[in-house]
Amino acid sequence: MDAAGRSASQAGLFGFCQIGALAFGMILISSRLDRAHPGAIAIGSALLATTANVGQCFVHFFPLQLLFGALTGLAFGFIFAATIAGAAGCRDSDRLYGIGNGGGLVLIMMVVAGLPVAANHFGPRAIFMGIAALSLVCSVFFSGLKRGQRYATDERVSWRTEGVPGLLFSWVALSMGTGAVYSFSERIGRQNHLTSEVIGVVLSAGLFVGLFGTLTAAFVVDRVSRSHALIIGMVGTGASCLLLGYSANLASFAAGIFLYLLFYMFLYCYLLGTAAQLDSTGRVGALGGGLERLSYSVGVWIGGLLAEYISYATIGLLGFAGCMLGLVFGFPSLFRALYRRESTTAETPEFRDNSLVN
Image 1: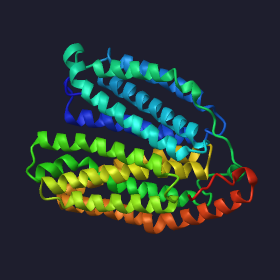
Image 2: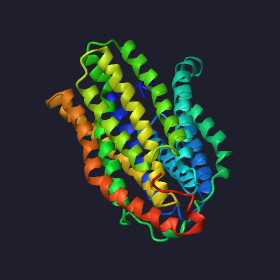
Image 3: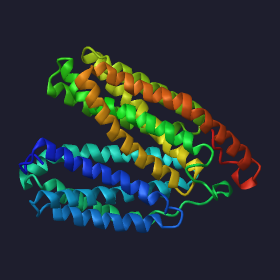
Image 4: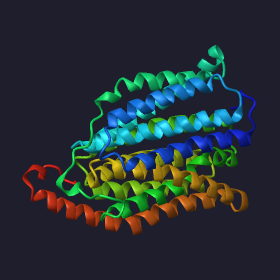
């Protein structure tokens, strides 16, 4: 956007349209995941993303750029929902989500590292061609996505089903609070008199910590109970928000960033896995993912108001409060539903080795 001569407000509008379309796409397609084939959805959406990004390279009229950006966001929303559904019906859905999120972080790090090189050699619009090419390559592998296997208890799962409201409430509260904190982490670092270079190093190193967090979730899923893992992740994320909001030097700032990415990525895998246990078709997971992105964007807006009129410390309090609200008001009903479902499935022979809580 900067290279195209767009103002900061235009760049913000472009990002809003793209992220908003992504969230809308996930929510929109979530109700169809029990009937549509995830592989077909992902392949068609990847082709749409490819077309939109190729078109982005050749247009200069801003409304058309907004349109192509929104189409890209919508396509990736469908893709994310399809991949969530593809893993939801598997017995090791938590582990698959952990490994998948880890691979996504690695890909993000590679793209971020390659952006300056691509821009220097091929111009500022090279990023769009790169996304188009990556979408086209990924479409080859999406054919392996299968529709989630329905369990006996999944027949009438909706957002009103026991446990689902608690999960969604916790997810939204978490994302709204952490959206405010992490989005303003760079400004918090500058308030602590850190240079842009130091802040960049801390944030980049934090991605490796996040990778460790998501892979940890993938490998301890059989060793830590689901309820304990969710509580640990929520408490750790809330504490890291407080630490980051009240950071006063490099040590506390770096500790806040590292702990946030460690616990948040760990928790995120378990949230997706829990959604899969409540609904193996992936509808709840896709709905939760879409609501997460919407609430995250709202949290960014609230965080901006708090930072401008009060202080950055209050952003940390907001992040902590969101986590505690989810823990106190969302998790109890969720845990009760999980234990009930575990008892129900344990009585059916084919489900005895598929624990919902452990």
